[in-house]
Image 1 (spheres, rainbow, N blue to C red):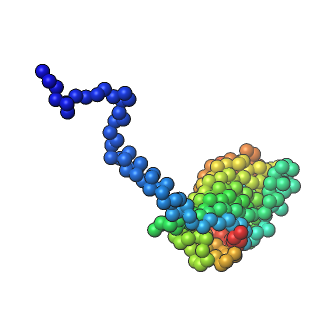
Image 2: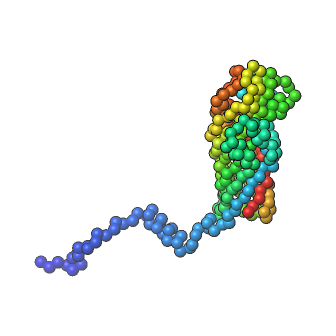
Length: 266
């Protein structure tokens, strides 16, 4: 019996590859197209680097830390603190170790790197790091009232890594708006002279904190300014030794920071 030549099969020397599903096929086609067309559009956009120098800061606390630490109702009307770029580090510097003194002598400053996107939204992003500091003074917190605690001054420091996304290309001059978030470390120290307690310097333990922020900025060719509102979450900051009788050893430093910043684009 003769075999039809079309029905005769020659054994494969190499086993054929299985058929590709449509998903991998499309990924393969997209990859080839990417290679042929060069880098994607977002990778061709401008990048930028900036220094950010805080010019003015103001913070409103959910509950003022001095009220929590002293348990003195004279601080019940205290709401926050404010200051300029050099208003930091002097109230408690004597009580710190050499390492902390060097660290805390670094002025408030930030650095960020970013890139435009060729998308509908967002049109750009930036990542960066910043150092912030705020001083809390007894006179500012009391606002003319008299406290039974007889003295407390505090310096606080924030070391934050940040991400921002922008509505418009951030490398271009003009008005822009952004949303951002950050994570970092909070620490500080306070000077206390409590009635019936030990006068001295007391450390605030380093604690993890988070931030979310919205704001606007205006950039020229090289210089600009930024106005932003940051919601700070720092609910469980530990104080190892509190000299005030009845005062808390776990303090909530959460609140809202308003900040005006000078921007210098490199």
